[in-house]
Amino acid sequence: MPKITVRNILELKESGKPIVALTAYDYFTAKYIDSAGVDIILVGDSLEMVIYGSDTTLTANMDKMLFHTEAVAKATKNAMVVGDMPFLSYQGSLGDAVLNAGRFLQAGAQAVKIEGGWKFSAVVRAIVDSGIPVMGHIGMLPQSVHRIGGYITQGEDEDSSRRLFEDASSLQEAGAFSIVLEKVDSNTAKKITQNLNIPTIGIGAGSHCDGQILVINDILGLYDKFTPPFVKQYTNLKEEIIRSAKSYAEDVRNKKFPKQEG
Image (cartoon, rainbow, N blue to C red; front, side, top):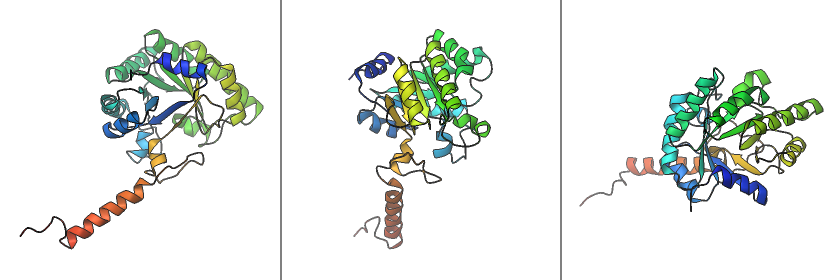
């Protein structure tokens, strides 16, 4: 199976086939979910929370993001790898934004993701004009959590819904190939999805988006600080890891492992 490209993602919207996306942060997780047939693997700045134990994504930096992007890219044969541009990597000058986006491609990604609406349309356009595909991200913005006032649903009232629609339209016009809608009211997400030519990928935005994305640690039960209400947990690896470690510890203490030699 050839590597999935921007054209393939756009074709999925045209065909009405849902886009499947997951996050990954290391070689082996990326290898396994790539073999499962996902379309997009996002190396999210969520790694700052689920890998490094921070309370927000704000302390993720370029060094961390590039380190994990390279590991994921080495393992991924089919899915599109998207690198999440961390806080302060694109909010300064357009030149810095383009340079940092390019470093993700050098690390093996095929595209980058940027948080923010129309205020960042010039940044998106500059990066796209440099030959780098951009995935937008509107709604609840983890990098703006202090300004927004928490992890709350966006687009529930008429004014907020209108602003999100304008954000999405400006990002499409700037050249974004898709837009993540995070914690967006489902009716607002439906309106945006129906009026865009590029696909929307929802996370806590209802069933009307062109695709869905979740954090891999959430669906595997490997992150227990909090679980968003929209997450479906497909297994609980935390319990399996604890059980296995306890069994190993018991075997060692009881001298059952390693097996006693004659």
